[in-house]
Image 1 (tube, rainbow, N blue to C red):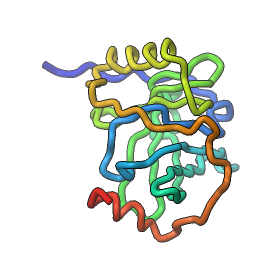
Image 2: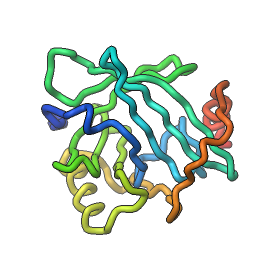
Image 3: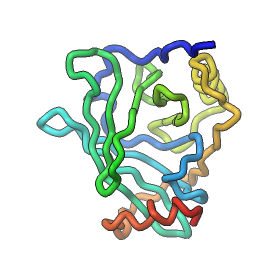
Length: 178
């Protein structure tokens, strides 16, 4: 059986999508610390149309981060399909916005192989009804939602920047489950 092609948002307003998003749940991935909490992404639109990406998480009381950039996979398409490349990591990944609510307050993001999935929110917590609805949307797109892992978020998210890990050491450590 062939999986149906993912439905992605058309006409995504990149300017409205910019800003901070909290990871409410995700599929655990080899490149994120297993005990990460307060995980968030901050997107900033650059003058050349690319998006600066800052991903942060806290582990062992310390902030770890990685930066990169994203750009439209096909500049002529109105589909919300982006390519993301992180500094120091020789991999380009797919970032497809599968759903965003009309107020740009929560989103479902995935990629075509259905190996990665993120439920994002502008706030560090989502009510159960909205969360369940977003999980249902992912399931309708063929994701195995039993793999979703809720990301621990503090009631008051950290706002300090903390020391920046410019060497990407956390990424390499996470490969070994550290």
